[in-house]
Every structure is written in structure tokens, then in C-alpha cells.
Length: 254
Ligand SMILES: Nc1ncnc2c1ncn2[C@@H]1O[C@H](COP(=O)(O)OP(=O)(O)OP(=O)(O)O)[C@@H](O)[C@H]1O
Ligand SMILES: [Mg+2]
Image (cartoon, rainbow, N blue to C red; front, side):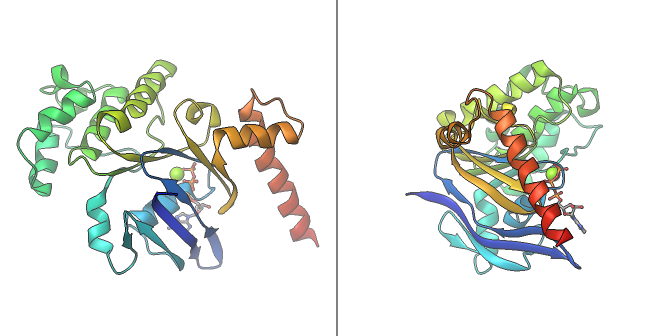
């Protein structure tokens, strides 16, 4: 299998709290990988490790053939990211904000217009960022992430705070990206229903541990075998988490 990201037993400990616990991910090149888990599961921490924003306590990872920690700087060039709410210079326009990123990355002049076009912001490019709606801000965040057309996009809850039509809009945009330019997307969410329409593969995280990794079809099979209606995957996901929480409580009682 052609994996573009693999992590091996990735672990992050804060004092005596384990935020990410022996997480091994396998992300196929060209796929959209949905990284699911309830609040506090460790999704953002895992993504921050991949982006070099925090150091793992244990474990290693490889991104597009480059191995952590030896190729740390090369890894950064492979990734465009959107972590939590992206921040902008609010008194500059969308176009000017992207222009700053373009200069820092040393990209061609037309990359700003290309990115605006890709996210559907061309006609709003000259509006101040502070006057953008939430959905437009998320689009601008995405434009910033994909400005250099990186082979990998890491998007941490890019639909956070959007209304249903905003979610729909951003979801369609993300779904279209691998076909528009050759990329692989790792996207986190705490709702399976939001991810199942776009993801090829799913990793489910709870309390820092991977509960499931596989294709959506495999998750459906898994659900059928456990007696769930396969059309309601959200319920399958939630009960997987609940079962794990109950098992954890019993273990701590022993
Ligand atoms: N700097 C830190 N120091 C101590 N604990 C931390 C730190 N960063 C994260 N944690 C803890 O690690 C756990 C995982 O946090 P993380 O932000 O990765 O979860 P998440 O899956 O992204 O959750 P959410 O859906 O709420 O964004 C949480 O219990 C959090 O409090
Ligand atoms: Mg998070």
C-alpha cells in the first residue's frame, strides 16, 4: 500500500497525563482521511506533532518519505495546515493576507489569485478580513493552507462554528481538492456524519488511543457484525466511544 503518512506508536505525555497513546496511523496517498474523536481525544495534539508544533514523548512518523526527527524541516514543506481557528491581519484584505504568506513561502505571484479562485473568494479578495463572514474566514484559512499546493493538507475541524450551509460549502470544497490538485487530506472532526460524506478512510480516537482504523466500508461491515444498522454510522461511532469509556471506568475501579 502506498502510504504518504505513517505514524508509529506516537505518544504524547503531559506530566502524568497521556494525551496521545501509541497511535499508529496509515494514510493513503491521494485519500481523504477522517480523524474522528470526541472532545479531548487527542486529535489536535496528534496533528500538532505532525506539524512539528509539539514534540512526541515517544514514537516516530514518516511523511512523504521523510522521517521524523531527522527530516523535520523538509517535512514542514510537505504540509499546508489549518489548525483551530486561523488568525489573520483583520485590517488587511483577504488578498493582502495571502500575499504575506506568499512572500514568506517565496511562491510565484499568481499563487494568491489561484488560491482565491480555488476557494471561491476571488470577488471578495479586496474586502477586509475583519468584514468576512465566518465561512469566508474558513475559506481564507484554507486558501492559506493550500497556497503552495503542498502534497498534504492537515485540517483541524475546518467546519468548526459554521452553520449547516457553511458546513456543506466547506465540505464540498475540501472534497474537490484531491481532484483539483494532487493532494492528500487529513481532516479532524468530532462528528462522523460530517466526515462520512467526504472521507475514504477513518481513524477513530478516544482518550488518546485508536479504536478503529479502516475504510468507511469496513466500518459499515464492522457495524453490521455488531448488530447495528449500517446506515447510521454516527450511532456506531458514538457507541464505540461509549463502550471504550465504560471499559476504561471498569479498569480504573479494579
Ligand atoms: N499543553 C497541554 N498541557 C496539558 N494537557 C494538554 C495540553 N494540550 C492538550 N492537552 C490535553 O490533551 C488532551 C487532548 O487534547 P486535544 O486538544 O488533542 O484533543 P482534541 O481531540 O483535539 O479535542 P477537541 O475535539 O476538543 O478539539 C486533552 O485532555 C487536553 O486537555
Ligand atoms: Mg482539537
